[in-house]
Image (cartoon, rainbow, N blue to C red; front, side):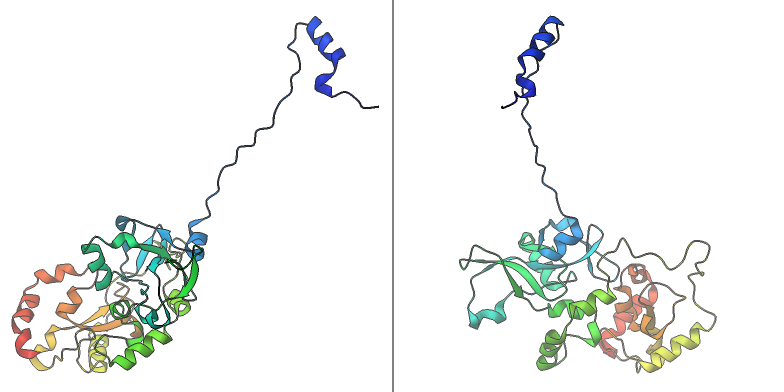
Length: 284
C-alpha cells in the first residue's frame, strides 16, 4: 500500500485546521547557482586575462605586475596563419619595452592579455581557423630581453646570436629569478634586523674593482670612460641596497645610464650629469 505523502496527509491538515494553523503546503527546492571565479594565479596559468592599461604596473626591476602577480603580456586573438607565417606570430613580453610603448601610443594596447605560462605555450584564438582556442608556442620579445639584459643579451649582438638567445630563453629560468607571486615574496629583514642601507666602509675599493672588471665601459651604452672622464662612470646596485655589494648585484654604468634606472631620476639635476651630456659627443 502506498503511504500518503506527509504534506498530503488529510488527517494532519484537518488537525491543523482545527488549531487555526496554516495548512502544510508543498515546497519546491530552488537551487541558486553562483558562478565561482578561479583565483587569479590559476586563471593566469590556464589562459590570458583581459586587462586595461592602467591595471599593469612597471616594477623597479622593469618587469610587469598585475594584482600582486608578475605577468607576461601577449596578443591572444590573432589572424589565421600558415606554416610559412610562423615567424610573424606575436611575441610575448615581460617589460614595458619599446614595442608595448608603441602599442600604447597607437591605442592598440587592448589587444593584449596577461598570463603566467612557464612552458612557452600560450592560449590563443586563431581567427578564421577554429572556434576552439589553441595553445601555441610564442617567442620572447627581443626588446624585452634587451630591457633587462637577460644573460648578457643586447640588441647590438649579431642577428644569429640574438635568434639563438630567443630559442634558448626559458620561462622557467625567468620565473625562478623573477617569482610569479609578488605577495608571497617577503623581505629578508625586519625593522629590527635590517642592516643600514649605506655604502660599506670599503666601497671605494669595491667600486674601483668593479670598474676595472668592466674595462671601464658602461654596461648599458658601452661608452668607454678613462682618465679624467672616469668620474662619469658609476657602479649601480641593481636591487637598490647599497650594502649589498655582491658582484651580481653591481652594474657599471655611465652617469646618464645610471640616471635612467628606476628611482634614480634625481641624478639628472646634478651638475656632473649636465657636464657629461655636454662632453658625451666628444668622448663617445
